Structures are given as structure tokens and as C-alpha cells.
Image 1 (spheres, rainbow, N blue to C red):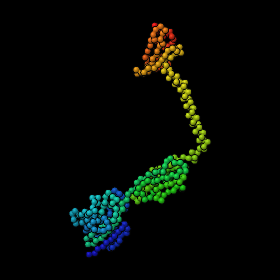
Image 2 (cartoon, one colour):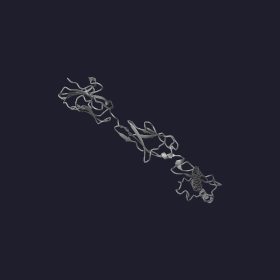
Image 3 (cartoon, rainbow, N blue to C red):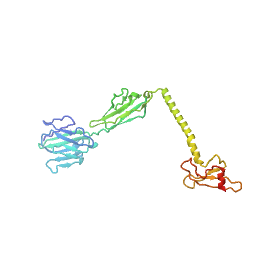
Image 4 (spheres, one colour):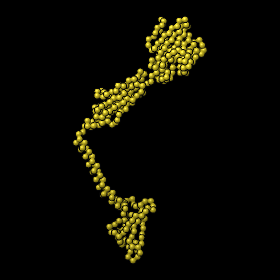
Length: 334
């Protein structure tokens, strides 16, 4: 019995007979959570049975499954079998929902009707897509002349490239060996702009959002000399002082007299002998008390008038008791 072993590792097929046997990966670069079909090609003989193995040898401990076309059911699971795996009559194998642990060496042993036996092997790599990159900065805001660093944060990237929106990339900026960071040793006003990084690998490519370096402050960015800046500061302080003085004068002229009128609604230049005092509020709203002086021949009598403060502070609190003269109070006492 002739035994022919053909080994294929992602490259040209080793031709042991006139036929070419190979394992074609579909897709060529399988991704995590995706699927892969290891398609057996170049077999001119009719296949009788085949077995798939994951590992360096075709031993029972590495066997995934055996498939015999003359049996029902044709599939016999092995130690490494998973429900994610499907076998086809032409010897091909499909794996769904790929995991990183699925990567490795696979061997298929095929038996043909003419008693020909062949082993074909292939290496399977499982790729992860790159994560959308994010640009981070060393600090913000930026002062002109600072040491400023931009970092492209991503994962699973094999290549990172930087660009500047609508402008050429600064010549004096230093890009690290792995292209993940850009360093401005002395950032200047002309370095302002929108920056973007792009991360890619064999199976995917992602670009970051635009990172705008706009807040660069310093002599060159302001364009103002020290004299102009000093004038602006002095003018601002003077304006604050004028506003404060004006507010104080308005308070003295209008607000203060109004408060005095509210406190003494019965005050008159002709009633110096009348004493007024506040008492505790016994009802809602302000409460006022007017105390009359005692007469010459009678004991002192106190008259209290509990009055609500009028809405107009300049309106007398009681029209018949306005403290106009001594005669008014004498008549009340009698």
C-alpha cells in the first residue's frame, strides 16, 4: 500500500504525485468572532474518509473529528470537537465564532478510494480588529514653548500613521518608533490645528476623531505688547472703581432715605417730644408704635396704634394721627 504525505504550510503545495493538494483559508485573514473555512483542494481521488487534528501530530489526543462517507451519521467527534465546527464531504472544515484559542496548526488526514493516504497541514491565525483610536494629550491648555505630547491610544494595531487636517505635519515634531506618540519639544503658535491618527492591521483600519490644538497662549499668539496689556488692565480697574462709586452715591441719595422713611413713618420736625420705638411683630407685616409724652397735670398715658406699613413709604401711616403739632396731641389727651 502506497502512503503519500503532503505537508502544506500557507505556501506552495508539495507535489507528491501529479495532483496538487492544498488547504485554502477562506477568508485569508480570519477575525475574532468571525468564521473560517479550511477548504481542501487538489484531491483528484474520491475521498473515502478523513480526520481533522489540531496540533503537531495525528494522534487521538489531537483529533477534532473523523468523517466517513459510507456511515450514517458520517461524523464521529474527537476529543477537541466543538459544536462550532462543521465538516463537509470534500474534506473541508468550517469553524464559526472564532476564538483566539482556535489559532494554531491543523492537519487533515485523507483516505481515498484507491487506498491513498495523505496528510495536509496549515497554520491558522486569528486576527483581532483594531480598536478605534483616541488621541490623548500631556496637558491642556498649552503654553507656547511647552513640551507637548500627543498619544494615539488603540489596540491590535500593526501600523499607526499621523496626519494634520488641511496642513502639512510639523517638521520639528518627533514621532516615536512605534508611531504611537508625537512630541513637540517647543510647541509654537504655528503648530495649532487638527490632528488625527490612523491605526490598522491586516484585517481592519480605524481613524481617530480630530484632536484640535487650538488653545496655544503666549506672546506670539496674543499679538499684544506689554504696554497695550497694561492699558487694558488699568482701564478695567478704573471702570470697576467708577461703577462702585456710582453705586454708593445712588445708595446714599435714594435707597438710604427710603429706608429711613420706612423706619420712622410718623417723624416730623415739629414733634421732637414724641418718642417712637419698634415692638416685636405680633401680626404678619411690619408693626409700628407711637408713644405720646405725659401731660403736666395727669399721669402719663400711653396710646399705641398698631398700624400696617403702607405700600407707599412716603404716605403717612395714619391720616388723623400725623404728629403735626402739640395741639393735636393735647386734644387727644382731653
